[in-house]
Amino acid sequence: MKILCIGDVVGKCGCEFLRFKLKILKVRKKIDFIIANGENSDEYNGITMLSAENLFKSGVDIITLGNHAFKRREIREYLAASDRIVRPINYPQGTPGFGVCKIEIEGVKIGVTNILGTVYMESLESPFEALDRAINEMEDCKIRIVDFHAEATAEKRALGFYADGRVSAFFGTHTHVQTSDETILPLGTGYITDVGMSGAIDSVLGLKKEISIEKLSKKLPVKFQNAFGAAKMECIIFEIDENSGKAIRAERMRIFPSFGKI
Image (tube, rainbow, N blue to C red):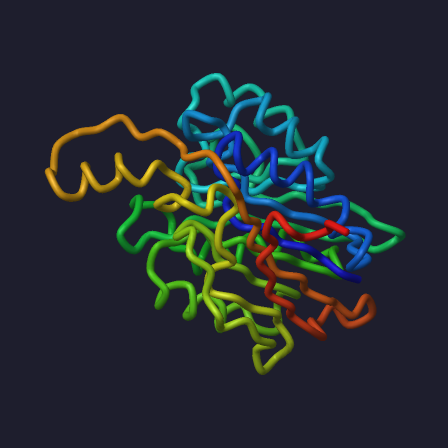
């Protein structure tokens, strides 16, 4: 089974690019299941019902989130009702939404979890303990996928090795910068430290570069705005053996505007 994992989708630009390119990629690569991180999919940061529905209509099966999951207050009720959006499992008990999602594709049960890092980020439950809980919840799933939304590469690498052999694939999100360390870990888990982002190429992590420069050079508050223009989609395809639940292959990709043109 081929599972496509897409890096942080940023604003209208990222959502529109997915809509144009995702169906082509799915057919060309014979993708069975698609996961996208949508915590920045709204034009003004965070996720809304509209931006989530845009991703689903583009072909995304499951949306994962991160530290901006609850940036938009109106999303809480939607998260509480949707079983196709996964928020970080290590938020406190009673937080709206679900930390694990299960779905069946062609008779194969797939479990997806989302975990938030704690190094340089929010003080939440240990990602290691959260991972143990998630794996227990996904015990009945042959294929298990982890989106670890974290800042520190060391934390991602450590949790990846901790998960090795217990999940099928483990991909990092949050930094919006794709790493080149895709691999199959020793015990059979597909891994990448950060899958990257989907959004404007001429930007700083999807934001207007002029605003980012002003913020970082002058140290004064600014109103962040998403960039627009030519876009890219950064992603990875994990091929998973349906019998063992182990990863066979990991193919990192960067999709640009020319993709799919004749």
